[in-house]
Amino acid sequence: MVEAAHHRLSITAQCRLLRISRSSYYYAPVLETEETLALMTVIDATFLDCPWYGSRQMARHLRRAGHEVGRRRVRRLMAKMGLAPIYQRPRTSDPHPQHRVYPYLLRNLAIERPNHVWCADVTYIPMRRGFLYLVAIMDWSTRKVLAWRLSNTMDAGFCVAALEEALARFGKPEIFNTDQGSQFTSYAFTSALRDAEVRISMDGRGRWMDNVFIERLWRSLKYECVYLHAFETGSEPRAGLGRWITYYNTQRPHSGLAGRTPVEAYRRMGQSDHGGHERQPGLA
View 1 (cartoon, rainbow, N blue to C red):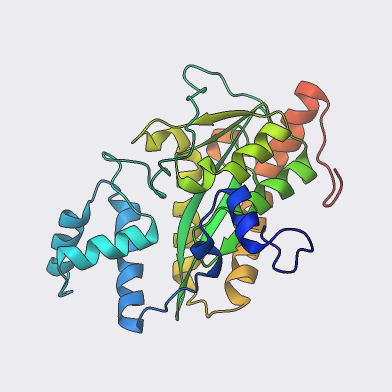
View 2: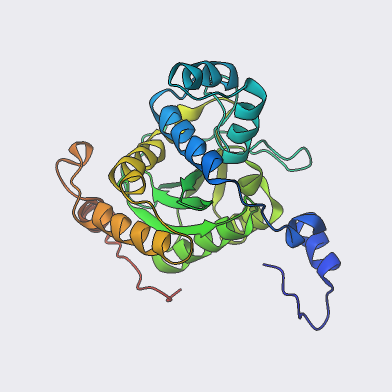
């Protein structure tokens, strides 16, 4: 996103155009202790099972499980991980006060074909010595993961990169739905959608069920991949997640897709409905 060696624009000017703070460009994450990282993994697993837990309930649950933690520490860690109870607000990050929030367009909409609606979400990925954030772009009707990216910060850049890859490989959807997280309301993300002439839809505050399919993706990915492998920092999580997402797309049948895999559903539904086809990587 920001080019340090740009010949015309300074870093300050680029950050201003992208509507991100200059401090976020220079931000270097501080590593948590191994004890804290282990606690964050427990919080993440617990939240997948009990997404209504706020910091008070989470702290109570952890103490009953033998962890000596206070509510203030749990609240800090949940905020760092992007976790918030479903009855209060979306589960990624808070909306930016200066970003435009778009109306929700999916109410009573029948979504039955590929590239009608895409959606995106961000989740926390624990590792042995740190953690990362993962964004995925998904086709709503077929559950196919179209693109994904990892990042060590919650800025908008890795979300925009995933979006641009999905658009280049698969064309464009009619509607793109997200929550109101600041990554998705950012100028960089919404302008990429507007430039592609895609209608933007955003969940109402607390409407976590609007992105239920991608929430199910996170649950499967974490229990079938992340929690089974203590990923080290570096290339391990990227390779491991890549293998699992390929398996999910090409080998994992879904009852909601009549026993087909997401790739099979994407190709069959696209061809039967519109004669569409998947574009090859790197081709616009």
